[in-house]
Length: 101
Image 1 (cartoon, rainbow, N blue to C red):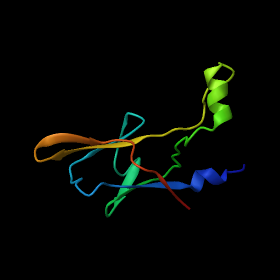
Image 2: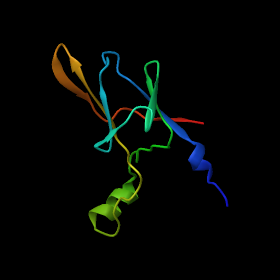
Image 3: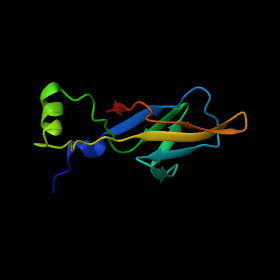
Image 4: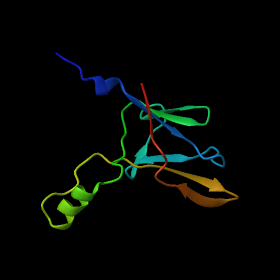
């Protein structure tokens, strides 16, 4: 049985400075559970799995999408954090993802 190298890759997400507990974490709109889906290390969320963003599309990729030859099927994860600031609900959306080896 072979285990792929991506199984050991983790992802780090730095929290914005004004995020304080309690907060809620979502990946692609799905609620995540601390200790199960991620851990908190200081001001950083660490996910045990690899999360990726699609990145910018090149000219030919945009052209093929526009004319209907191809779609975009790459992994494009989004991490959002919901929290309170001055008693008001705030969402930090599409936080930057950093790979951890």
